[in-house]
Amino acid sequence: MTPTLVRNLRDADPSAPADAGTRARDWAEIQERMLAPLYEAVYDRLEVGPATRMLSLGCGSGLAMLVAAARGAQVTGVDSDRERLALARERLLPDEGTEGTEGASAHRARLHDGGLPAGAGADGAPYSLITVFEPIGCAAGDSEGLAPALKSALPLAARGATVVLTGWGPPERCATAPVLRVAARLAESARPPRAGGWRPTLRDDLEDVAARAGLKPDGSGRVSCPFGYADPDSAVRGLLSTGLFDAAVRATDRSQVEKEVAEALHPYRRPDGTVWMQNVFRYLVCTT
Image 1 (tube, rainbow, N blue to C red):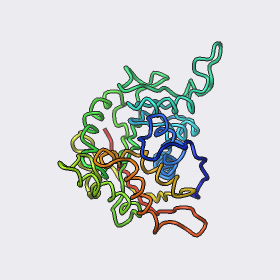
Image 2: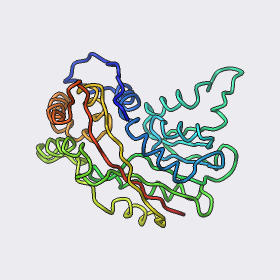
Image 3: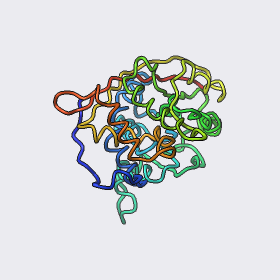
Image 4: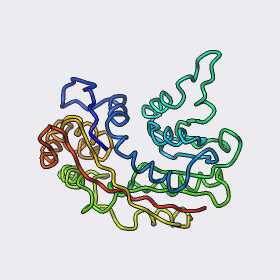
């Protein structure tokens, strides 16, 4: 992946917290695409195509769904972040609400705010694939609600359906890990320390979630997902849009977090001003 130039979306006071809309845009326009190699690798392995009925838990602003829909899959997404979900609607359902118009995407995609859909996919068939593309394993407690969510979703899936979980790779394989340690250090500086800060990825994070959800692991893989940014400002905004620095912001303030993240990015700046960090992400394929 090559760095993509991203225009500045705001010229706001750097000490002010980003509003939800700006944060969602930063995620959709800067950070989300860093995981595109992960989506493609999973879809290639599972041969996602017209026969696929996919339910995406935590679908965010919809890039993974868009990639699957481009392969012909029927896709349904669920997310509790309304700002990100609104951006997913712009991508997947651009004709929604237009009088007398039903775009082709309306027949291949459905989106739900918060709760799971009441029934099967758009064509009435049960889901053959459930995905969780929001990587776990980098923040304390980031998988706590995942097993119950999976258990709730499984009745909507066909017998023997595939479930894919994703997570950060080993810290020694992720150049972003030292930058994320800023989040842990600042969150721990509060008295009492703030919960939810970064922690090192554990080898069995994904397997632990699968076991708690009653899923049977059936293979895994690792994918290189370089983080490339047009400049340090884009890198800071993209990284803060992940939510991994929220505890640090609450413990200190946004301006301090932005300053320290920018300093931590210095080793990854290239002569042309871009920022480049090699990372590895892991996925676990399970069956119901």
